[in-house]
Length: 435
Image (cartoon, rainbow, N blue to C red; front, side, top):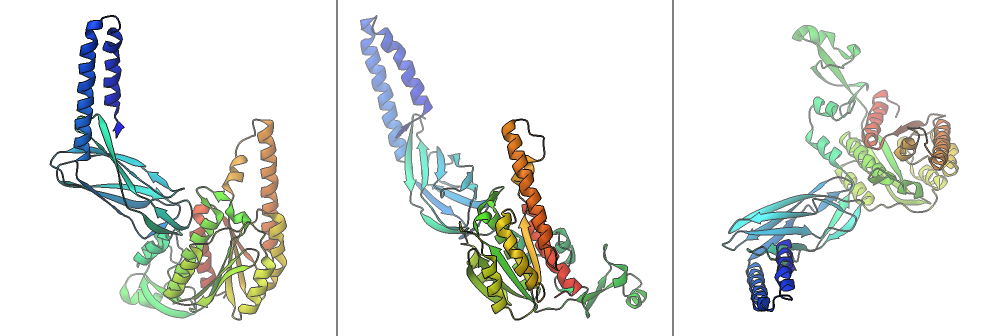
């Protein structure tokens, strides 16, 4: 039983006649009577609160997405004939942000009430929800009766695949344009004719089919088909530098989200997609294959990937790729360029790979360092941080320039732009026939 503020106010008021009884002995009996009355009322309130018949059930998806709000629903079934007020709090896993974290609810007689809140997981993996705690307030408002309803359940937190889900629902060209993509799947500037469609804003004049336009009396665009069944290998860096947080997620989280988004589009495009997860060696490898089953394998591999607090051995990765990849492929390497000494080891082997394959390096801008440079430093300590940030970013730009020589393509964007930037570059490479 937990006292309410109302009970504490009553007890404070009873202290006044108790102090007066020290000066007027005749008030002692009245004080005892008032104390007994408050005690009886509190007991009655506690019994009534305890007698409320209540059932609680939690409903949540079996898979949550990291870094985004996920819907959780708590259903309260009230079987008593009197309306009651309760406070509900769910036992969410440690590190999860719940909004709101608890809720005051009014339950009508013999009713069902739903409380919906959002939970934002901070990392991927398997976690456990605990029990649901409910405080039932007595009808007199003097005491809360706290109850715990068993609701323990494990849940898996996967990368944010909302972009892939939206693509799955989109079928028209406008849907893809609204998502920020520059090409339709399989449609591009290839050599094989795919179909004719009505002219849309943004189409090149070179793609207009003038004979079909004359026959139909309105502009018609000729759509060419890019080559299918090409090989794409997505390499994800899981080293120590990818453990740094950019916003609410780590760099590895951003890379995993973008990698799965890219894999989804490539699979839908009919291409063969593979995966290499690496740090001080190759941690996991999936050879390029086609089909939705391959996408599910990649999601299962990446959902539990965590950064290793070790250096990154690019030589081991590229040596492995030389042995395993016999077909010309697009190599999408999600990595970080903040550690100049470590990242410089990738330059020579990556340039050698560019003779056989099409390398594409993708990284996330460090927004924290950029933020230090936006305003003049007001203090000596911040001036030192400003100088260090400037040097790190200058080294990063110099390293990017070295990597980008010799046919290696580069993408370095804000975290929320990485997924679409990766897919757009992939579609551009397909359209140009580079593979």
